[in-house]
Image 1 (cartoon, rainbow, N blue to C red):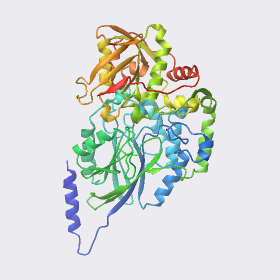
Image 2 (cartoon, rainbow, N blue to C red):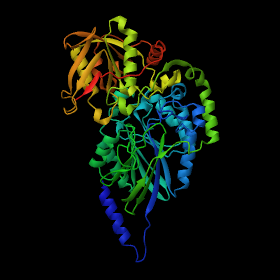
Image 3 (spheres, rainbow, N blue to C red):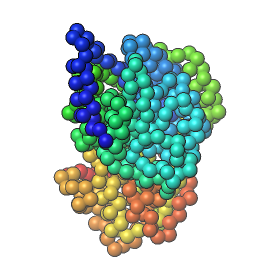
Image 4 (cartoon, rainbow, N blue to C red):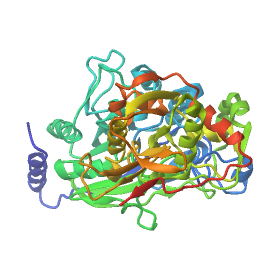
Length: 528
């Protein structure tokens, strides 16, 4: 097996052997990219939820496929060589997915002319069969390197680890990467085995290099932290187009998590937040050996300065008609913004987390349930002040999860909280939003080594330390109760019932019972 270094050295020596006066030109490539689009085919508000046509006309909305069509066309016109790729998670997030599954995503991605996509964890939300239907409908390769799918009939022989495309006379190697814990995050079934990202990527780099491909791009739905680890621990990767952590990288904004691109050695890492609010645009210059000489760019915000393609807008409007009766129904009022930004709710107490947990607990408290635990990964957006529509509620809670009630010991509650704070540094969705308990955690302690330093349970007007040996009634959702987001300690819970009402309906009814919902936080989660 030839190493990437050997191949590049051989290429360089061959170039030096050319006759005097012959020069090989650098190769430039524009990498256009999106990630975590989550069925936002229509424009979104600044809070990543729905945005009315009136507000869109006023220039207050962002994104939407019609705007993205224009932006991609303009970016391609600026470049001599361009590709468009996705960092995964096209599925889930709005009623478009609930109603159409992957059909609208396939149609719009084909219209945009994507060159490749990696599998995100949400592509498995409805099992491998729905993913396969999407793959059959798209006109580009869908990739995933770090999994063995040979025993899964829907994907075996169809889902490739990598692919090679040509652009401007040069071969580009594209490798897909998905979260190693997808079996905990979605519903891939028992036939797929997910593996370590580093070894999977290196294996494909070596294979592509042996084919003479010296420009390699990883499409990674694994998060900003994992992407940096992959860049550090592999050789031969030129660019990583990221996703999963919804990370905003920029050279101009003080809200960015890092520079665009983030350079780790000779590897350029990019990501473009989420929901189609930005189009990533990275301009890379390679020398003849395939090494990066320059990598510059900036995500382009999809605001009112980008016009909407009229034909695409009309098609999205047509597709939205069956959804309008449901989502336009006003179900409640909110006195203020209800903060549900994943970047907030996945690391600390947030107002949306309190609302959802409170609503869950209120629904089943009469059944002897005293604790509510909601995974922050199930909370997908904020809701702004004013009328609250069912469409907004379903944007916050799109997964059709049902209430689950069960009984566990206090020690299991503590273990659940320990799991919940175990991946805060990676901004993972297992972070717990709670009701009926308060907890304190210490970020200076290593994950799963005792970060939870105190758990209190309500006792009338008092708060008492949780009793590790006492049995408590708990409510969560069926995904968490089934072991999702690492909550496998709930699999052996007593008296479990997973078929309660839809969580979105529970939240809507809870808010409707209020005379204008007032968002709040009250210190139920403390970080030392």
